[in-house]
Length: 165
Image 1 (cartoon, helix red, strand yellow):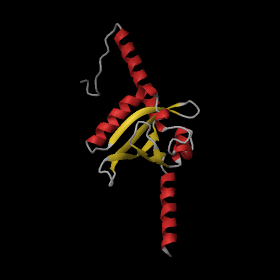
Image 2: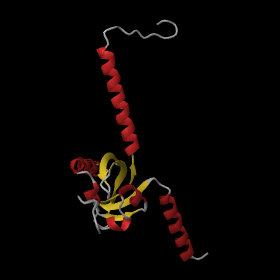
Image 3: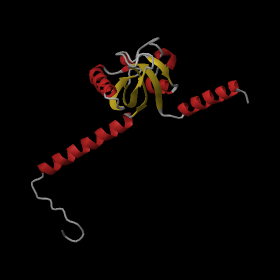
């Protein structure tokens, strides 16, 4: 096997590994638009946009997908983590190409540019957690309703274990 075939095999293996992830792997500039330099194919299922549409803000920027109310907090959290040389984990909402709102979880870190000595790149992973957030909200709603019922009952309720305690 020559070096060219090995390079193709590694590239194919890398692409295959990324295609198994439920979300998108990315590399972007550390700028307010999150200008994408690399986006895995999972981008389309997550955002509704083909990866080529997000690359270098061809048709839209990743910033444009983030729900406007979440943008400032995300920027502050990401830049704070990067400035402290820490990974970041954030949860926020995006608006897909079709207008659907999804909750996402993102984990990433800053990458040092060897030419400038500055951290100017982010690398990370973003995945859809909408179902988990909906389940969490349903549970909170049920707990709230149960609390209201228990607080409105005029009779006392006594809890005990099988030993009467």
